Length: 314
Image 1 (cartoon, rainbow, N blue to C red):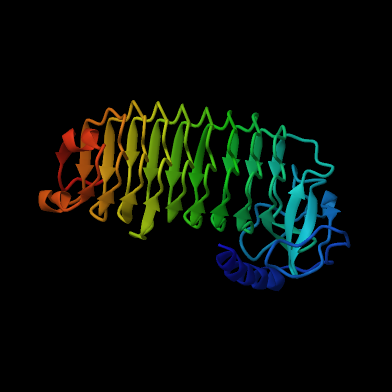
Image 2: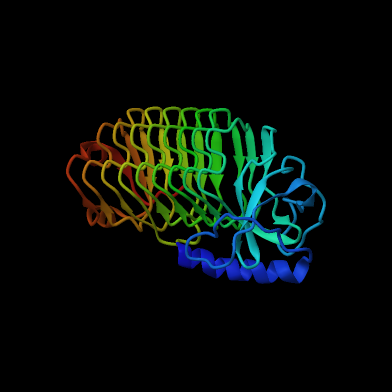
């Protein structure tokens, strides 16, 4: 992932430098992110934050309401990361896309852990939301991510018990281990192009009712073991073309799960992927012969006994 981040970082920095100008961040003592060079520089954004809503390649140098006082550090020679609330005391958090003309590309590990924010907006420049960044933010209700975000780290939003829903942009390539685990109020999740949903990513999201994977032109993706386990209210799952494998215990103890849409690209269902479900109906995009060619592991009686309709797509 660091290689991916570095590649996209160089593209974003080039675009940002063509459109923006301003002073470099001040000096400080925080360290740059692992794998990157440059002396760290910590500061408060205060009124120097550029617009968080600006389109790629643009900035306004106007303060962003909800971003004043955030603590920053140098991430690389021409990029910044947000490391904490600093002097910010509000509840509606808007991450700026630029500070003094320098792009913000990362939210650091544990930056806002257990803070009292109620809403979050992340701009297109932010490539990576690090592990534990918003873990335990029990008052967080809404999260707005943007096209341009690349990855959501391990436990980044775990324990955000008031979070209602989340749409994962098509640019996000991975949702980390336990990223949204224990988000007790989360009702719906929509994916657009994510290639990897890691272990326990949405485990114990007890209000989750619907998961929709819209896909990205059939780009291959997978869902790891126990990714949605113990989501007791989950009733419906829709997967688009590109899904290759469902991991072990993927939907374990999703007792309300009755309907699932599966694509022709599916090649294997790991043991116990659907154990403890109430699966009744499977809509499969391929033919009966293609369905019979799928490797289905043990402990999937619910899947094997469900009524299957062939050549049915989302």
